[in-house]
Length: 291
Image (cartoon, rainbow, N blue to C red):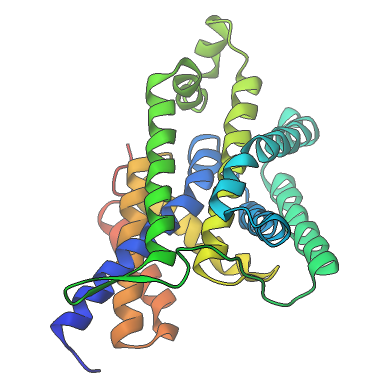
């Protein structure tokens, strides 16, 4: 291990930037898993789907991948609403959402991956944008724009979601649906409709997260599997359903992984980050900002 102060600072900065991206990919699961108690293990597959949509439109029309993902938000919202409706009718309505619902989302993960493999193959794909490649140098600190730009937009996404949940009627209903559905019915609010909206929003975030992912690194259909454990770890560490907690947890895991990769090697990063998760939960089982 070779230690230098400049290397340490750059590792911390890199960890914060990648943590911002982790927050974006975990925000949708924070809604579905943390608030709705829906274990959507297929969420990374929809992120990869968002990556391939950004790739296709970028290569055919030259449109910026982030702009593409913003334009595709309504399509992913409709996709999420349709998936929840199937899930509700087939499983949740019958009280079978635990094991069979988990199998349903595993099936979605498998079908999405196979479809992408059949259509695009297993080769890695990337996108073109003006901020992919350049690096800002602030003294001894390097800021790669291909990571910094997704980090900034990720924080904007989290801020928008937090404002929506805290300052709108539907947002407050989403926060309440996991606590007291009877109270919502007394206010003439259909809990199923609120859950459908929340789940649709969680899938819509996959469009943006997918664009961020393909900007940071080339993708292939199965690359999302590596993020399944990390996403749920961030949600649990931050506190179930807490978006600010999700951001803090994502930053911490990003910094821990970056420091470990820099000084000990990338193969140690997952083990150390999950060890950090277990240590934190041993001290605070509810997570950092859990209730």
